[in-house]
Length: 141
View (cartoon, rainbow, N blue to C red):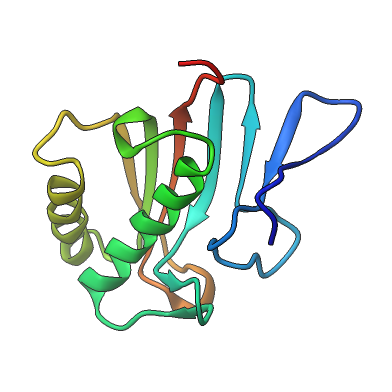
């Protein structure tokens, strides 16, 4: 993967493929930039070095957030620049408390971005969690 974003010459949208990110497993890219916003695709708890899901619910959820953070950071945004998150879990009662715990740690007690959390029947590779985010990352700060 390259640090240089790909782009469509007829669009102001840039598609992201930063060094150290997970490898997409299909017809998608890990993120895009449109103006001052960075959109990160659904990230799961995949170890970017092996492209294999990490073991353990909390470790997997943390890794998903870290994967999202890496994409945002490649465009100059941090977790505090998140303007919206969408989280998918396969068991709300079991995984929502873990998501909350991980966010409390990563966001150092707040403030927290707006978040929607949804329970879904299935995720790719029978995973338990996925997070996608939108970040404010103006080109000039």
